[in-house]
Image (cartoon, rainbow, N blue to C red; front, side, top):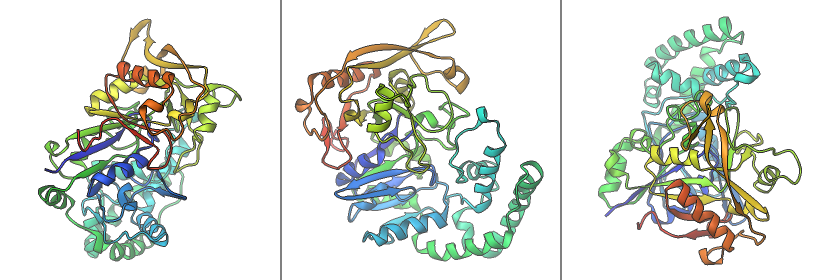
Length: 436
């Protein structure tokens, strides 16, 4: 009988989902991307080779695995084609194993122009930290019911009419409100028509494909982008992404029923990071040499895969994880980057906050309330031994085992997997999601 697993980030993204999706794919016949756009960055290390993926599902580096881009993804076709070309140059067969939903909203040049112009207009304290890739404006068009979708590309006359209408609107905003340059209709149209012919062979009814795969007994892995605390509904709004990053979106963003989602694996670092603006209760100083925050930043190589920006770092936030656990209905946890904490004499876990003079043990809703939180810490002893590349639970230092057990206790979710390095085999398995 087929079993399907959803992999989601439980923090502010960058938790190491790509490696875990790749590792789990040895038990799956298909990998589904169900939200976000090319603002996502998944880094895979296979032997001596490093792959950086934005749109193509992480399962693509596993030979014979089918990959699907669902309707919940906003699609920059030009970027997707470039990513495919890079993978093909590395000898990976992509086109026969990648399918794209005709329902994906398109990201077009005016979306990135709007994204950048809006961010530039904001005061420094209000900047979201957007990647400027047009993700938000594309989702806004979708919700406003003026989006152009993949299926529109294959009717040039209809596409031209829709494009001219939406471009007239956005050019007015760009020039009259944001003080930016207008985007040329013909340039956008011509490129879209070229991209249409290139992507046509990949377009397929993803919902139907996934039901057929499930009926055939194939295991499916649903891969999210970003993290729960960046979710448009449940994150630290407005310092969030523009899509739903939670497990429930796997159904809506790919066209399957929730009953087809059997196990939800939450990925979390052994500490916390965040890229861009927004509140971060357990944040540490990452600039002062010799501090825990500086170690997290340098040893963890905490730079954004897409942006290259330094990630902010802080202690593990169990109160935030509890919120993520509830929203996603987590079955199990995967802890990544445990080795980054090697050598620290003491470790803090944020177990709750003081908020307006009261103790709370769950991350509040909305950025303003989160910004007012003062973290409450519990201190545990660290360890001097290395955890890097350890492959068995019993080989971890006793203090590291105790730290992980305490994370289980304060979060209320069992740890299924511990990642101790970027390679596939640098993984400790306690419960396999596909056999649980």
